[in-house]
Length: 398
Image (cartoon, rainbow, N blue to C red; front, side, top):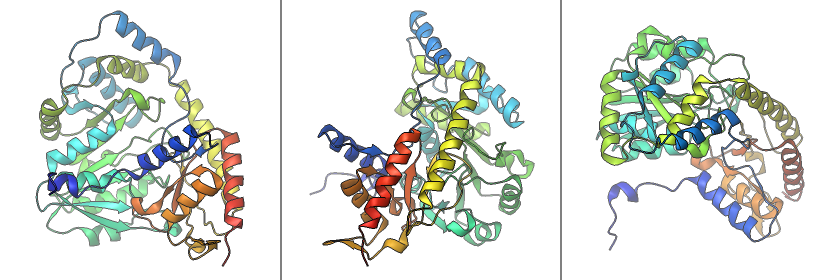
């Protein structure tokens, strides 16, 4: 007899975390694994942010914080949104959570109920459809392809909306593809959504600062949809603060208050010291952010050039985040001895076992023809990993 709830039984484990764990197990056995499965900057948190955390400990910022976060941090977030994005928010329109992942989940739980549909363009971050299911909603995917840089069109969005559509999750820059929507592309989507007043927009902008187009564009800039848009962001990617667990949601007060109400029942406010560190991240120098962005752009250029040399890989040119999402279906049906590559997940496991490179198959991202490679690692690791992948692929025969 299964004692677990239907809610848990219908969820799948995170494929990215599972592959990262398997990579760690092999490393513990002495195998030289290059881990390109995890979406985590390899840089250390900037010194001025760590110093702020030390001061917070010394100054006894060690008690419960307000559920939506300290006022000073919410004010700093409002200033960031104004200065960097030209968007006006009040602290009461901000809720700080234990990472952007909790922010997304909290907004979905606040908005979505039984029978509601949530549009999730594919490829998608592995947790989006699972979070919709947790909220008792129904994920509705819109497929995209590498020829269109994995971006949906306004026509596709219009066709996917039904009377049951409650929200769309839009991630730009994208995990897992690195695709970035331009202002014109976002305007086209906003024009469609403006005609469907029941549809909310959850704009995941966690990779905002890892952008190679020169400027981040938010769909919240368009007045017609602004009051139905909730921005998700945080410090994990831009400031190399993944373990500090600070994210936020910014949007209409009715939703933000609901998210805070939920948060008050299952986690309370986020870590006090991490909040003081995040405040320093937003109010201090942004030079480390730009230095990391430049390093990621250099790595993007490197991995794209090397991946294009691998027979069977089809590669586009991602404009943000730190992922490459090559199409590899040309390798399906090939074999190495008795081992047959039938799916992208098969290929990912093959590359782990044979090349000792950890990546993630595209099935969990809603893109079964692709694999995801994270280039949030050193230039040397990228060169070694792509050389190993090329050698492993060369072993595959028709």
